[in-house]
Image 1 (cartoon, rainbow, N blue to C red):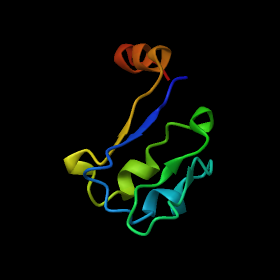
Image 2 (cartoon, rainbow, N blue to C red):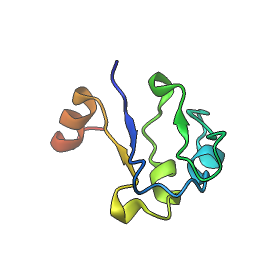
Image 3 (tube, rainbow, N blue to C red):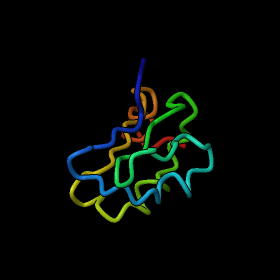
Length: 80
């Protein structure tokens, strides 16, 4: 299965900002305090990037969004 959101467990601090802001309820808070969120519904991702924007460790790649190939081609071609 394609996983559009990858959480780097070594870098994620478990702040759960992504859990709180995701409009698609893609994530679930980890029951282990300080643990990375669980990507529960990867096929529901809207690729809006709000989870990445709110991540305090995004510059260290705590969270990565990987759009499907068809979206990547459209972005490179400048299509809407």
